[in-house]
Length: 488
Image 1 (cartoon, rainbow, N blue to C red):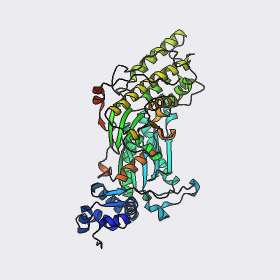
Image 2: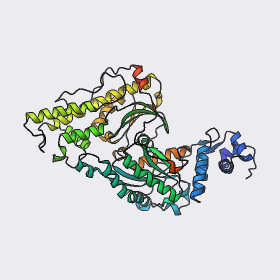
Image 3: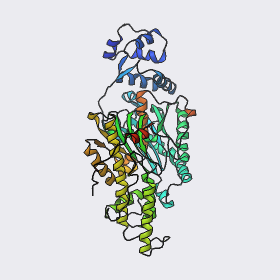
Image 4: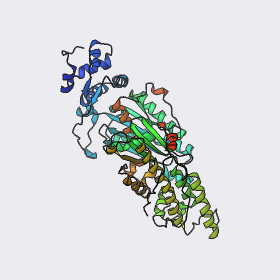
């Protein structure tokens, strides 16, 4: 391969250096490649994507080879400049078949697969954050009958529906598997039996298509989803609240997180469900088809949040960790006391008359706990100069973040310190395939995170997010005074 110019910079500016950069990928030891590496090596994102898609559209072999070459190219050799093409919005009924559309081949497309808990999700997104196709099978009503998630049942439901869900996402996007650039799948953390189904199916698709596999951290996907719908630059503060997790972290980049605090026992979503079960809310006429968390929120809105005085967890601990087990137990004791006073047998379906007040008091105390931890996290970032003054942003995500009372209360904290609060739409706060596809896209754009050996990828039920900074937070000795008033 020969390039008739000694000036790589000029070609970078005019967008004509694609041949030279391609040489870096396919002929890393050639003279052309060395010349490219010896200069600043700037190229526009349009040219890079054209090379990537032009080769990946030819065959799955070239798709794998090119992406993995890019994965190994140092950032000092290749500096991809931002390029934003015009966005064309197409109605669902008018979506083109990208396999037959020449222009669409310059787009990166990622298929995401999510099976970490009780949702079987799949979606296809492009590099601009457009959701081209999505499908979701929810198990919530099934588990509601069992009073909680049964892993073996969840696994079987994933196994029964994953193929139709993935195909549904592709069909909605009017795409074939061969049309996507890469496949992303949740591999950690989550329920082992559930993760296994998604990982094994993703491997099957990779083997069938030859596409690259991008393993995704479930909590990182929640954190990055907001960047798909808002212009958010790194670093930013992240608050993830769900049925299985509760954590505060700083997102410094894709795959680069500082963990400020996490739950020491149970997650808020699980505790909300357990308290709802203790209150027998599945027998309540207003919320018998809702999840426990939704039922608590609905009834709490009709109750007196200060009717019962409950202790805020870990109020004396100057860290950003969480604990909900003690709060659950004190609420259990309150329910037992009220049932005894009203003469209600514990094994009956009868609900205490003050159920709204109990729900409101429980929710208020749990929310106060979340507010105090967020307050300290913001002060810690301020003390350590982690978040720039011109980029004070908090991303709030996870299923529990859909609770509007909690969201408005945390908004009071962010308003105090001048932070912008960004919450993905409710449907993207719960588990879904879109967030996994977008997380895969974030990795793909950086040319990192692609599995060298897809068959060696395994699932991890437990996996922390980023570098643990909780000890440093504790040693900082930050006091959260004066207290921020919780909205009524």
